[in-house]
Length: 122
Length: 425
Image 1 (cartoon, rainbow over the protein chains, first blue to last red):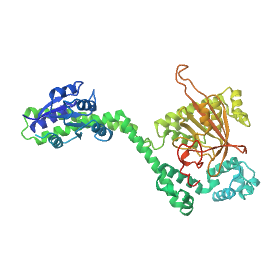
Image 2 (image 1 turned 180 degrees about the vertical axis):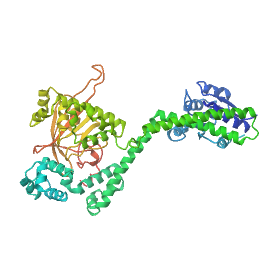
Image 3 (image 1 turned 45 degrees about the vertical axis):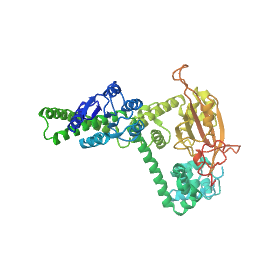
């Protein structure tokens, strides 16, 4: 069975592009728009990898990450964080919160595949 | 006050260099030609006041006449060591030797230091801007999001040869929408950057310094305000580089206009000659802080003025001759200004003596009047004002400094941090 990637991203067109790239690479992809039930969605979907946007409309990616790391069921889940401001304080804060990898927008599709493959052994 | 014997020679040197006749300089400085002649031949001691007037007439700082060019340069280099620390501290006792032997290099070092300080401030201002300017950060986020989507989508279209026509149509649609969004976002960003970020407005000078520099250039007196017409200053205020400085300048102009209205120039000057600020305030029905401000900002006044808010931050600085005021950071905690701040409505006066080369005696008068802009139920705002005047009083004086880092009084009980001058003082 294909490994499952959950993508939390509020930009529908970015989500659609990522979904297309990963699906063609053999992943099963589900998406979530980053609303208030995002943490719940992670718990129930139990993905092999979470791709998480840092800047979501209602909630910060850190808060979702912190909640995930605090829950024994999801504490070891690999998390790739997407950010439109990739450096400095944001990165440090995400690292403290336990992010696995970071990727700055705008990323190339090849980068995306490389990062995802590196995070989940298939 | 005794001056170094050579001060007279420096006055003469400077006058000759400007091609000025003795009588001309004497007239400009308001002393008799014969008295100036005695001064120039070092046969009379020069008081701080006369020295100040001579300096003004010669277009130089009094300190320069007193200590020579090297004196100012030495102070600058000490300041550089104080701010940056480093290897210079160990050789501080040789700074005079250095300046004497390599005046050119020393001058270069001092000007480089000034430049570095300026650039650091500029970098901090820009940093602040990126961190705190939520509009800019949102606009960038918008553009980066659109670029991300365009980049990914375009790559999919370019690289996927067997793409399903339905998907292809969908991605083309997305591309179109995102490129429109990108164009709008980029335009908004450009408009924003063009509109607000003029070259001067990069925080090179702190706004307060801009305002002070403007007032200093006007001789600390604005005749426009005497006729009660602050609007006449507007063309000049508009010329200040930053919006913050323009706002501060307007607040000052309004305040000084009110002072001018309460204390009409000629009557006030006459009352202050030999008068006491407390009595003058009483006679004019004006506030004591207004009298202190007005006294320091009369045309040609040699007096200095400092004002601090409740946090002790200096919000206004007119340096008096011979009393260096710190440009950054906190001042000497012994200043009577702070005594007044902690004892509102009580007059504080003292004779103080500055530390270091060319000690000066100054008579200071400080007063703090609390304000209740939100009434009895609101916060109490405090602002302390200190008028600083040269004095020839030989009585016991309170030793004060500019700020701890460059103050040579090693054993001072109020010391906040070690002085860089400790080893050499």
